Image (cartoon, rainbow, N blue to C red; front, side):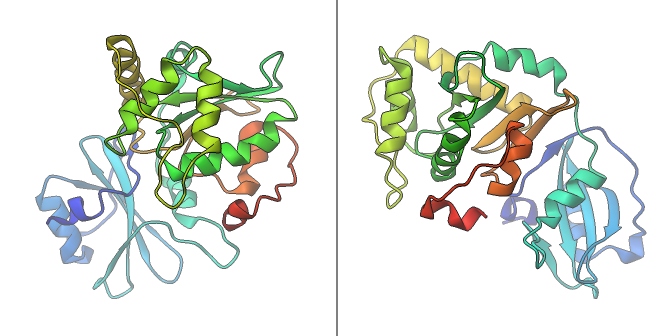
Length: 271
């Protein structure tokens, strides 16, 4: 298996190209293998723990990996410091230009979603892509409940890709007379043991298949490779995107609302 395939779960970012500052003699042999497969080094930078960061591009999508000081070992994934800060996300913010999501935002507003929370004159709105069987979508749902009580509207955009039952469960939500009630049932009865949404799957109609396909295409337009994925406008009106379950201390910035006391023990790991 190629190195590119072995780290496929790492988040990629769709952005514009910029020049590399790496010298050929400094490139680890594993990264040279990636280059030989068609990828490019977009940028290098000094990282924590005397490591070097590498911004790698392939097919106009980007990822960050790290190499040890001796260039013998590569690391991929989230680098977390002693304070709990996600340094990989920090470096991505510093070294990967953000795409302009403005043209896609109107498509979000017109997508097929389930609105939950404060629906009449909400103080803020966020969009969240979810798969009915996704455990971290479930955790995000639990966390957002606290903010929905104080003015947040969450517009949940269903997609289906995780399990064989995902399409049937998404269809059960979309085809229900009360979509919000069906969505709530899926989350309230969610099985963390089996990573199964709580609603029973049903046969998908042509209409719901079309809606799921459109949502999936929108997800890919945004460069999103997994769920949950949260999209919102910040205080300056700039569109932001967060992949994965947000940490609890990130929720005020995402929602634009005061921090809420979250006492759910299942969410303690995300503090």
